[in-house]
Length: 289
Image (spheres, rainbow, N blue to C red):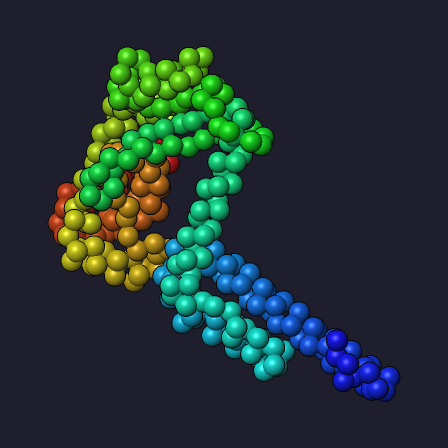
């Protein structure tokens, strides 16, 4: 093999060995750069997904900004390496899909053969399609999810959830007979609060009426925002209250309290009788904030 090199000098073979080593180092460096660029692409895509930003922000803003910063801090040669990071729109979308699938696989692998409890509720999307929302708590162990290990189920009191004959509770108990069902404490508190204090409910009804008056009209909402800006307010709008999202009640009332002077002035300008409520100290101190 390679008989033509039999009479070559020792320097020839040393030179060939050096060339081979240099080629190997170049290949390793190229592979390392590609691997690092791929990792950087996944990390940036993960941040884009967490911040709920459009996928094209990677190539239109994040990467150009990173190149500018590195070039200013460390020089053009380092900045050129960042250009190898793939952050195209479709690439970011694929990265996010990969991350989502991997997170799902991690969750399933942790749930296998460990004790866990689930909390479920029914929700609807913007198309009014019903969806089952499920939260799971578990003690992390490894390896096949078994229903027999589900020791607790927490839902609201709706018949579709709590029914012991045809509800979700009944279906789960068919698979895990020893499961303990509990009525969600937050839902129970919300139900109790509806009739706990008629006076507070009346106050909240008055607040809701004022909020709807201002926000239902785009023109009134814009004028109210301008009034808040002129008064150097921290906020420029009130918050809608949705009966289904009862946990938002505290935020709604707190925002009204913080903008009570602006609300009073705005209602006065529009000759609305409720303006006097927001100048009444007895009414203000009763706000459950």
